[in-house]
Image (cartoon, rainbow, N blue to C red; front, top):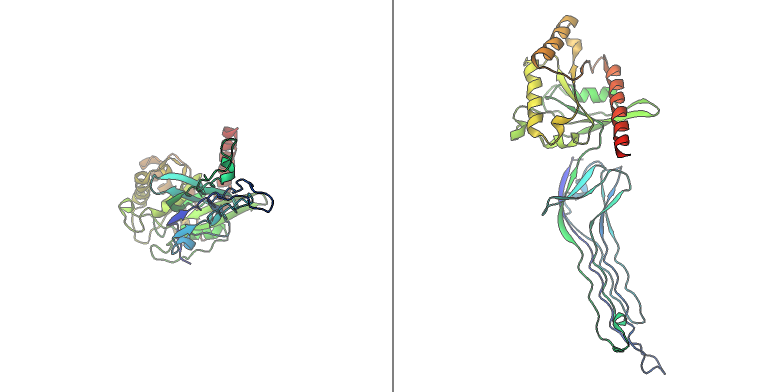
Length: 344
């Protein structure tokens, strides 16, 4: 199934039903008076979180969505039926924008969570409402109002605790497959990963976190090179970034230059990603000797002035993975507790 993380659609809420214009006509009741009922409200449009969806492919071809109109009022003071609401199922992490104003209309984070994105029209009033002591036989009634109609943009931002980024073939897909049940495509050529992958890392019964793996970022991505920076938005909800670096690049490129390239593209992208905690994960340590490994770590600290944590691992042999995962869990726990305290 094709991975679709953006879609533009047109949503239209239902129109409110018109009020009724009617008079009571019964035997032996010559002046029954007005009895026109109110119309029904128009149906609204909602987005609903669905945990079993992971793309917006349902909105790739169908672009127009209309809620039901409200029914008009009728005689005997009968109120028109309310129009049925329209529920649009979307993956968790979906953000809905008003294209015209760029306003965020809704963000869906939980399964079953509902958010209105188009308000249904309000009902019209029947002529019974206009009856008074001086207006005994009113012929006035009001029409129902139109529902909201707008073009919206659905944008999926994956819900993950940790995001992996790095150059192509740095070993990100191998890493996520080694620590979780995710099985992304793994090969020895660039851009094997064409869309984001999610994996759940479970350390204990009540200790787990979600990792997001995105396609590789290359030099010039900010200008559209490679797959560009389109998928970096999926790291915006993470609390931690892991910059995965290939210890032994197949193209014999310089490791320090590779680190600078990704960090530079991250700064150019901005939007808060460059402010997130970022750990350096040096992968494929099994391909070099220990002395060369120690020298390279020291060079990174001195030449790049790297202040954050540095982990040395091998995703293939699982060396260093256990320590890395427990450190990540510790960071996420601290981050969560801090946010809870701030909310209180």
